[in-house]
Length: 277
Image (tube, rainbow, N blue to C red; front, side):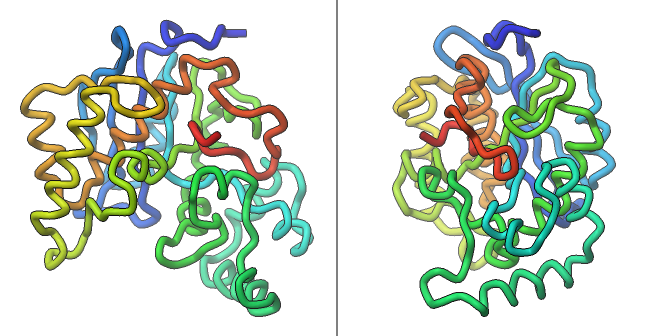
Protein backbone atom coordinates (compact mmCIF):
# COMPACT_ATOMS: atom_id res chain seq x y z
CA UNK A 1 0.00 0.00 0.00
CA UNK A 2 1.32 3.43 -0.87
CA UNK A 3 1.97 5.57 2.24
CA UNK A 4 -0.26 8.62 2.41
CA UNK A 5 2.25 11.49 2.47
CA UNK A 6 2.79 14.59 0.27
CA UNK A 7 5.95 13.13 -1.28
CA UNK A 8 3.86 10.28 -2.65
CA UNK A 9 1.78 12.67 -4.75
CA UNK A 10 4.06 14.85 -6.86
CA UNK A 11 0.97 16.02 -8.74
CA UNK A 12 -1.92 17.67 -6.86
CA UNK A 13 -5.03 18.58 -8.83
CA UNK A 14 -8.19 20.58 -8.37
CA UNK A 15 -11.05 20.13 -10.83
CA UNK A 16 -13.87 22.62 -11.34
CA UNK A 17 -16.56 20.51 -12.97
CA UNK A 18 -19.58 21.23 -15.14
CA UNK A 19 -22.31 18.78 -16.15
CA UNK A 20 -22.37 20.29 -19.68
CA UNK A 21 -18.79 21.05 -20.72
CA UNK A 22 -18.20 23.00 -23.92
CA UNK A 23 -15.50 25.33 -25.25
CA UNK A 24 -17.22 28.36 -23.69
CA UNK A 25 -17.59 26.59 -20.31
CA UNK A 26 -14.95 23.85 -20.06
CA UNK A 27 -13.96 21.67 -17.13
CA UNK A 28 -11.09 23.55 -15.46
CA UNK A 29 -8.10 21.69 -14.10
CA UNK A 30 -5.53 23.24 -11.73
CA UNK A 31 -2.29 21.28 -11.37
CA UNK A 32 0.20 21.93 -8.61
CA UNK A 33 2.87 20.46 -6.38
CA UNK A 34 3.64 20.48 -2.69
CA UNK A 35 6.21 23.00 -1.44
CA UNK A 36 7.37 23.73 2.09
CA UNK A 37 4.31 24.90 3.98
CA UNK A 38 2.03 25.02 0.99
CA UNK A 39 1.21 24.21 -2.60
CA UNK A 40 2.42 25.86 -5.79
CA UNK A 41 0.20 26.23 -8.85
CA UNK A 42 2.03 24.96 -11.90
CA UNK A 43 -0.50 25.13 -14.72
CA UNK A 44 -4.16 25.38 -15.66
CA UNK A 45 -5.77 23.14 -18.26
CA UNK A 46 -9.15 23.60 -19.95
CA UNK A 47 -10.98 20.39 -20.86
CA UNK A 48 -13.82 21.10 -23.32
CA UNK A 49 -15.53 17.68 -23.13
CA UNK A 50 -15.86 14.60 -20.93
CA UNK A 51 -13.51 12.60 -23.17
CA UNK A 52 -10.68 14.98 -22.28
CA UNK A 53 -11.34 14.50 -18.57
CA UNK A 54 -11.57 10.72 -19.01
CA UNK A 55 -8.17 10.76 -20.72
CA UNK A 56 -6.64 12.83 -17.92
CA UNK A 57 -8.08 10.49 -15.28
CA UNK A 58 -6.16 7.64 -16.89
CA UNK A 59 -2.87 9.55 -16.83
CA UNK A 60 -0.24 7.69 -14.79
CA UNK A 61 0.11 8.49 -11.10
CA UNK A 62 1.03 9.26 -8.51
CA UNK A 63 -1.51 12.07 -8.31
CA UNK A 64 -4.27 13.14 -5.97
CA UNK A 65 -7.19 15.29 -7.12
CA UNK A 66 -10.16 16.99 -5.48
CA UNK A 67 -13.19 17.17 -7.77
CA UNK A 68 -15.97 19.72 -7.40
CA UNK A 69 -18.98 17.44 -7.75
CA UNK A 70 -20.71 15.02 -5.37
CA UNK A 71 -19.59 11.40 -5.42
CA UNK A 72 -22.64 9.98 -3.65
CA UNK A 73 -26.34 10.33 -2.93
CA UNK A 74 -28.05 10.43 0.49
CA UNK A 75 -28.54 6.94 1.91
CA UNK A 76 -32.08 7.89 2.95
CA UNK A 77 -32.98 8.62 -0.67
CA UNK A 78 -31.33 5.47 -2.03
CA UNK A 79 -33.12 3.22 0.46
CA UNK A 80 -36.46 4.93 -0.23
CA UNK A 81 -36.07 4.38 -3.99
CA UNK A 82 -34.88 0.79 -3.65
CA UNK A 83 -31.69 1.52 -5.60
CA UNK A 84 -28.49 -0.57 -5.21
CA UNK A 85 -26.78 -0.29 -1.81
CA UNK A 86 -23.23 -0.87 -3.09
CA UNK A 87 -21.54 2.22 -4.55
CA UNK A 88 -20.31 0.83 -7.92
CA UNK A 89 -23.70 -0.78 -8.56
CA UNK A 90 -25.49 2.41 -7.55
CA UNK A 91 -23.39 4.52 -9.93
CA UNK A 92 -23.91 2.05 -12.79
CA UNK A 93 -27.67 2.19 -12.19
CA UNK A 94 -27.71 5.97 -11.87
CA UNK A 95 -25.67 6.45 -15.04
CA UNK A 96 -28.32 4.58 -17.06
CA UNK A 97 -31.13 6.95 -16.07
CA UNK A 98 -32.03 9.88 -18.33
CA UNK A 99 -31.73 13.26 -16.67
CA UNK A 100 -35.46 13.90 -17.01
CA UNK A 101 -36.20 10.69 -15.14
CA UNK A 102 -33.78 11.70 -12.39
CA UNK A 103 -35.48 15.08 -12.11
CA UNK A 104 -38.99 13.64 -11.96
CA UNK A 105 -37.99 10.92 -9.47
CA UNK A 106 -36.31 13.38 -7.12
CA UNK A 107 -39.17 15.88 -7.54
CA UNK A 108 -41.69 13.21 -6.52
CA UNK A 109 -39.58 12.37 -3.46
CA UNK A 110 -39.49 16.03 -2.41
CA UNK A 111 -43.21 16.54 -3.07
CA UNK A 112 -44.04 13.71 -0.66
CA UNK A 113 -42.18 15.34 2.24
CA UNK A 114 -43.10 18.19 4.61
CA UNK A 115 -41.95 21.76 4.13
CA UNK A 116 -38.47 22.31 5.48
CA UNK A 117 -37.49 18.68 4.94
CA UNK A 118 -38.00 18.35 1.20
CA UNK A 119 -34.48 17.14 0.36
CA UNK A 120 -32.58 14.22 1.84
CA UNK A 121 -29.05 15.09 2.95
CA UNK A 122 -25.75 13.29 3.27
CA UNK A 123 -23.92 13.28 6.59
CA UNK A 124 -21.26 15.62 5.14
CA UNK A 125 -23.72 18.31 4.03
CA UNK A 126 -23.96 19.90 7.47
CA UNK A 127 -20.21 20.14 8.20
CA UNK A 128 -19.46 21.28 4.64
CA UNK A 129 -22.46 23.58 4.19
CA UNK A 130 -23.05 21.93 0.82
CA UNK A 131 -26.19 21.61 -1.28
CA UNK A 132 -27.92 18.21 -1.14
CA UNK A 133 -26.47 16.00 -3.85
CA UNK A 134 -29.98 15.16 -5.08
CA UNK A 135 -30.60 18.80 -6.05
CA UNK A 136 -31.26 19.12 -9.76
CA UNK A 137 -31.20 22.95 -10.13
CA UNK A 138 -29.29 25.93 -8.73
CA UNK A 139 -26.84 24.21 -8.69
CA UNK A 140 -27.67 21.00 -10.60
CA UNK A 141 -25.36 18.83 -8.53
CA UNK A 142 -27.46 15.70 -9.15
CA UNK A 143 -26.60 16.01 -12.84
CA UNK A 144 -22.95 16.73 -12.03
CA UNK A 145 -22.84 13.46 -10.08
CA UNK A 146 -24.62 11.72 -12.98
CA UNK A 147 -21.95 12.94 -15.41
CA UNK A 148 -18.86 12.74 -13.23
CA UNK A 149 -19.06 9.68 -10.99
CA UNK A 150 -19.29 7.16 -13.88
CA UNK A 151 -16.10 8.65 -15.33
CA UNK A 152 -14.31 8.06 -12.03
CA UNK A 153 -15.60 4.52 -11.79
CA UNK A 154 -14.61 3.68 -15.37
CA UNK A 155 -11.12 5.14 -14.96
CA UNK A 156 -10.16 2.80 -12.13
CA UNK A 157 -9.04 5.54 -9.73
CA UNK A 158 -9.04 4.98 -5.98
CA UNK A 159 -12.01 6.57 -4.18
CA UNK A 160 -11.27 6.45 -0.44
CA UNK A 161 -14.26 5.28 1.55
CA UNK A 162 -16.25 4.41 -1.59
CA UNK A 163 -14.36 2.14 -4.00
CA UNK A 164 -10.98 0.44 -4.18
CA UNK A 165 -8.90 1.35 -7.19
CA UNK A 166 -5.40 2.33 -8.31
CA UNK A 167 -3.89 3.90 -5.17
CA UNK A 168 -1.43 5.94 -7.23
CA UNK A 169 -4.44 7.83 -8.68
CA UNK A 170 -6.65 9.12 -5.87
CA UNK A 171 -9.88 11.08 -6.32
CA UNK A 172 -11.55 12.95 -3.46
CA UNK A 173 -14.73 14.98 -3.47
CA UNK A 174 -13.83 18.66 -3.15
CA UNK A 175 -16.02 21.67 -2.50
CA UNK A 176 -14.54 25.14 -3.13
CA UNK A 177 -17.47 26.83 -1.38
CA UNK A 178 -16.32 25.37 1.94
CA UNK A 179 -12.95 27.12 1.74
CA UNK A 180 -14.38 30.24 0.08
CA UNK A 181 -16.80 30.85 2.97
CA UNK A 182 -13.92 30.63 5.42
CA UNK A 183 -12.11 33.33 3.44
CA UNK A 184 -14.90 35.85 2.70
CA UNK A 185 -18.06 34.58 4.39
CA UNK A 186 -21.19 34.62 2.27
CA UNK A 187 -19.98 37.34 -0.10
CA UNK A 188 -20.30 36.50 -3.79
CA UNK A 189 -17.05 36.29 -5.72
CA UNK A 190 -18.16 34.99 -9.12
CA UNK A 191 -20.86 34.99 -11.76
CA UNK A 192 -21.31 33.61 -15.26
CA UNK A 193 -23.70 36.48 -16.03
CA UNK A 194 -21.95 39.52 -17.53
CA UNK A 195 -24.25 41.91 -15.67
CA UNK A 196 -23.01 40.57 -12.33
CA UNK A 197 -19.31 40.52 -13.13
CA UNK A 198 -18.65 43.63 -11.10
CA UNK A 199 -15.94 45.30 -9.03
CA UNK A 200 -17.15 44.01 -5.62
CA UNK A 201 -16.80 40.41 -6.85
CA UNK A 202 -13.38 41.17 -8.31
CA UNK A 203 -12.30 42.65 -5.00
CA UNK A 204 -13.61 39.56 -3.20
CA UNK A 205 -11.43 37.35 -5.43
CA UNK A 206 -8.42 39.53 -4.67
CA UNK A 207 -9.01 39.25 -0.92
CA UNK A 208 -9.41 35.48 -1.21
CA UNK A 209 -6.13 35.16 -3.06
CA UNK A 210 -4.33 37.43 -0.57
CA UNK A 211 -5.48 35.17 2.27
CA UNK A 212 -4.54 31.99 0.41
CA UNK A 213 -1.06 33.29 -0.39
CA UNK A 214 -0.55 34.12 3.28
CA UNK A 215 -1.91 30.78 4.48
CA UNK A 216 -4.67 32.43 6.51
CA UNK A 217 -7.04 29.46 6.60
CA UNK A 218 -7.53 26.58 9.02
CA UNK A 219 -5.74 24.38 6.47
CA UNK A 220 -2.57 26.42 7.19
CA UNK A 221 -1.23 26.05 3.65
CA UNK A 222 0.25 28.85 1.58
CA UNK A 223 -0.72 29.09 -2.07
CA UNK A 224 2.30 29.95 -4.23
CA UNK A 225 1.49 31.85 -7.42
CA UNK A 226 3.43 33.74 -10.04
CA UNK A 227 2.35 37.36 -10.61
CA UNK A 228 0.77 36.35 -13.93
CA UNK A 229 -1.17 33.51 -12.32
CA UNK A 230 -2.40 35.83 -9.58
CA UNK A 231 -3.60 38.43 -12.09
CA UNK A 232 -5.36 35.77 -14.16
CA UNK A 233 -7.24 34.36 -11.14
CA UNK A 234 -8.42 37.83 -10.15
CA UNK A 235 -9.47 38.67 -13.71
CA UNK A 236 -11.52 35.48 -14.25
CA UNK A 237 -15.02 36.73 -13.42
CA UNK A 238 -16.54 33.25 -13.60
CA UNK A 239 -13.94 32.12 -11.01
CA UNK A 240 -13.82 28.65 -12.57
CA UNK A 241 -10.03 28.80 -12.33
CA UNK A 242 -10.14 30.03 -8.73
CA UNK A 243 -12.58 27.26 -7.78
CA UNK A 244 -10.19 24.71 -9.31
CA UNK A 245 -7.34 26.21 -7.29
CA UNK A 246 -9.41 26.05 -4.09
CA UNK A 247 -9.96 22.35 -4.78
CA UNK A 248 -6.22 21.95 -5.39
CA UNK A 249 -5.53 23.43 -1.93
CA UNK A 250 -8.01 20.95 -0.45
CA UNK A 251 -6.16 18.16 -2.28
CA UNK A 252 -2.84 19.35 -0.85
CA UNK A 253 -4.19 19.32 2.70
CA UNK A 254 -5.73 15.87 2.21
CA UNK A 255 -2.49 14.45 0.81
CA UNK A 256 -0.70 15.21 4.08
CA UNK A 257 -3.27 13.57 6.39
CA UNK A 258 -3.79 9.96 7.46
CA UNK A 259 -6.67 8.50 5.47
CA UNK A 260 -6.63 11.73 3.45
CA UNK A 261 -8.18 13.58 6.40
CA UNK A 262 -11.46 11.70 6.09
CA UNK A 263 -13.28 10.94 9.36
CA UNK A 264 -13.81 7.44 10.66
CA UNK A 265 -16.95 5.68 9.54
CA UNK A 266 -17.61 7.48 6.24
CA UNK A 267 -20.81 6.10 4.74
CA UNK A 268 -19.71 3.91 1.80
CA UNK A 269 -22.69 5.07 -0.27
CA UNK A 270 -22.60 8.78 0.53
CA UNK A 271 -18.88 9.55 0.62
CA UNK A 272 -17.39 12.65 2.23
CA UNK A 273 -16.21 16.13 1.22
CA UNK A 274 -12.47 16.71 1.65
CA UNK A 275 -11.49 19.02 4.54
CA UNK A 276 -15.03 19.01 6.04
CA UNK A 277 -14.80 18.34 9.78
